[in-house]
Length: 167
Image (cartoon, rainbow, N blue to C red):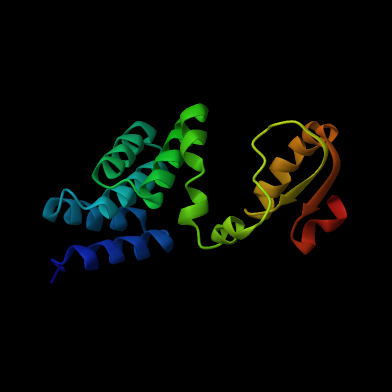
């Protein structure tokens, strides 16, 4: 017997996605959206799944639909990822800040007493870079440090222990 509760369908779809059963997750997501077409969680799930399937235009449509229904950090972050995956870097980055509200890991950055660097000149200042993604992302973004470093008096980089020797 299939569940008919949208929250149950949503949870099942998310769990199936997390274990790599994307086709099954899509079936549950479709059921959820048939029952409640205004369930933004379902549209977020659908966007993520379509991105996994390489259907980036449809993924973006689903992300936009979720964001139309509810504008919150989750739907905005999902929209940013759909835009970035599709190659719309400007629009994607404009929404990417929402990750600081959406991610439990990143919420701690809101409590820092120093402002976030937004590209302004930093003469006489220290730039403190904190790894907030995985090792691959950290390695990828390290290539930008030599471009940013000359703008500051000092650069301090906080990374996982495994990467310390590489900095």
